[in-house]
Length: 183
Image 1 (tube, rainbow, N blue to C red):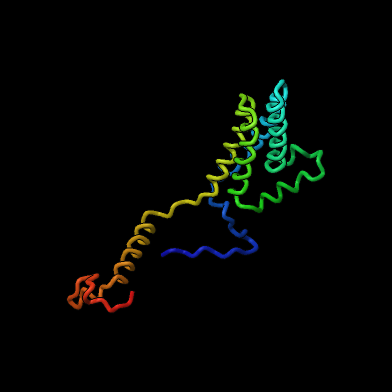
Image 2 (cartoon, helix red, strand yellow):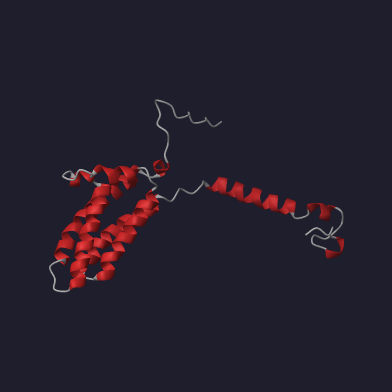
């Protein structure tokens, strides 16, 4: 016999959708985001040491992306800014796919401006972080028995609504001469 889970109360916090994610993945992605922010800042500064204006712009954009990721992932890295806690608090209440989508979009911009090694590596780490956040938003599959039960009950329901009464009365299912006229 299965025991029902106790309801959320003062002793037990309410379960959120991100509780399905293993702890090592949740904190690993946050750590990777912090490392990606620092790498994007450093490699963006290296990309600015160039003659071409497109690569200079790509380096500046990459450094801005690094600051944004640092504000969201690790606001302690930006303690000198008064508003450092606001982006982190905003995105902590949102689903992880939103954060992942933001990281993927902002990581494409510097690479599209200048495809140098520093922009590829710096923005690539932000892209990987966004991809991992996208993966954390996926839920676990149901157990095999539950999927089989759901599939068989859906199949039986479909067969029962197709005209099982016609077969019992001696009619062939889908016989156009014996149909009631209702489409």
